[in-house]
Length: 111
Image (cartoon, helix red, strand yellow):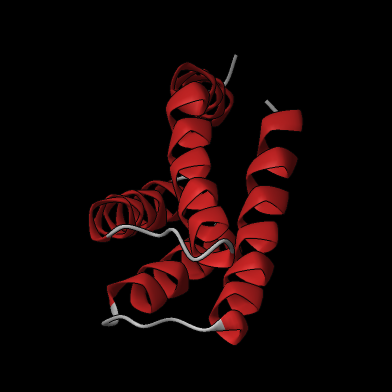
């Protein structure tokens, strides 16, 4: 096995090891979006979802998922804004979340 192949295998193993944490972070963001959609988004959940989006932006960038990283960073920016949010924010967040999931799901299938 060549060095690049070995490194690629190790990166894939690291990705797989942390995939459940990635999905847990996505679920927190999804909970926040659902809370926003139902007018039940607490400040604590909003702050936690923004933190998780920030973490995802870094992790996904590290694994070469630039589109997912950018989507997570945008989610963080939206969630970091002050209340109140409106329906357009929920729609925008839905779109960025879909992009994030697509990137993560695509990477997961290649591991």
